[in-house]
Image (cartoon, rainbow, N blue to C red):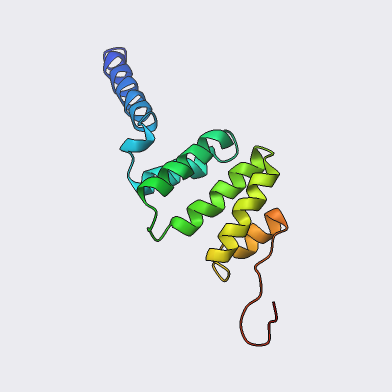
Length: 124
């Protein structure tokens, strides 16, 4: 066993350093899936970082299929930062863009902002 201990320590230290390199990548170096994973991971422990990741994602992947999810997470990050006014402002924009989207009910519940009804029979 003692003969294998140095090799075991080397393997463990290499495995640990590989993980550290992966998590320390700059947001600009991340693909969208990695950026979104980090955004989800940072939402509660570091909402400021999560918000920065959401904004980076919006700059780089504005028209991606995950844009709606990313916008909803940005609103959650603002709430976690106690920036309720900014969260509600973004919620109005979000619900105007995605009134029937899969995250609309969650955004409405988090912020108290609801989609504006539209269609036949609605008078403005």
